[in-house]
Length: 231
Image 1 (spheres, rainbow, N blue to C red):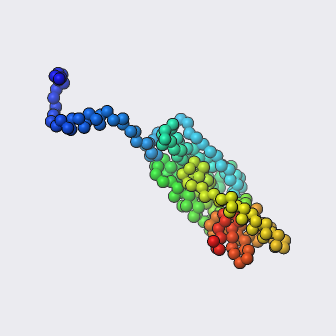
Image 2: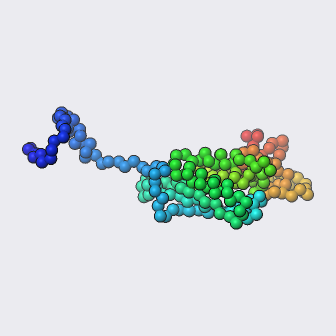
């Protein structure tokens, strides 16, 4: 077959018969698009999915509202994923305004960089207030206000599937309920006020930071997460 060349020739190469056929097969193969991964060059869309969390730490006069906006990548494909894009923190309290704004800007920048952002949770939750921490409702200990913000981010990352949630089995829940009932039945009432929903004599759990560890039959067991020194 003769082909007329109308453009100026700027180069050439010779293909063997086998290479020519191989190239023709490749041209016929459907091209697989590579999934889009989060990176700093993705422009902010006009619409983002947002979730707002409310916290009321005792170290702040007013409640704080933490809003995390997510971007949906590879929508309507097998690679669809929801990734955090930006975070905002609003409150009537002005004593924390300066560092809160700085923190949100740094967190948003890390989110937009992409990659594994789950390390932020550990970094934030390991910040300790030199004046001491506080107990949230339910008996969960927070070493600082920054740590509670980290706990909110962890909760959000679990909600969108970036962090796996460790859930107790029904059997474990039943055993913990039985242990709690036996403990409260065998212990005499005390005047000490309970911090959360667990017995007032419970101590702090090193795994889940909840004041829910009781001693029964010489075994320390956490009624919140099920952690036990006795296995």
